Length: 365
Image 1 (cartoon, rainbow, N blue to C red):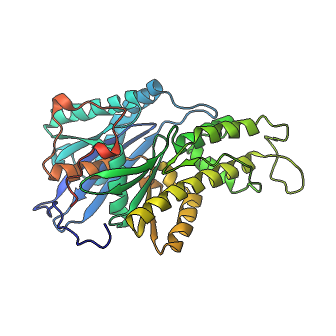
Image 2: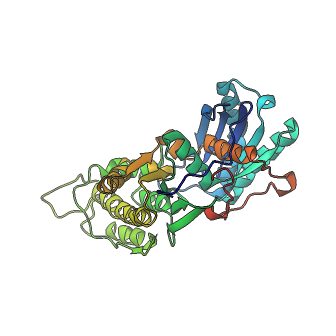
């Protein structure tokens, strides 16, 4: 906490370099990454390979189909990761995999691959919380020390701060995640899923001129997004809605660009508000945005305005580290492994529900 004497980190500098393989597959991205922790305490990303399961416009990704994609691509993604890093499985100290949260079938597919590699090469397993992976990679890449974290993705929306070896959740969504809200609306207006629905909404929003009224549903430190999505869907049924029309400042019409613009402005304002409350509560001067939606430049811009008014800094990463990836799992897993944590084979299951505040963050003071 700001103003307090910093305690010495329980994580000591390694006596030798450590290597970890990280495997991520909690949703439609399959990722593998190799990370190295050096004797001077620094971190080196040796490889970060990812393949995305992309569905046709208007369709989401189903658990079974996504799991089949992960099984089909696992060998190639892992081999590419090892090849780019210039290492073999024999050089790796531990194999880290996403234990949860996420979609059941894809999680199980990647956990099966991790267990197989562990048995084949006699390497220890480390189960990793997906959310903690995002946070630790974000801290490492940006250099943020003790930030308030806004974690925004397809499956999670949380405001988090660290205290006493736990990432504590200050506020979260009460129903659907912000990424899920954006993705589902992208399907309603038939936007492409390539490279991602959220990215295409962001590009469409840049052309929007009209801010449509939407429910502003912050509830204390929490937000509710399902009603906003319903309102957005209702606008597409309005007689003024023109699916093919461009933005107009003279005609009384509603375009997809206007709706994307309105959705972003309203939802991001809500997220900035609850983040600001957490910043004020703990007196932090740092905000870290992680998760797939964290790539959104408009969200970063709005958060930057709030941070500037509070003499604080905003930290964010690019799509290599914001979007689900294997290297973040390797980073969080290797930190745990260096503190003596391993996942026994008999307990190397995965779970769709794994809260951020359930993890013992033993590597931080």
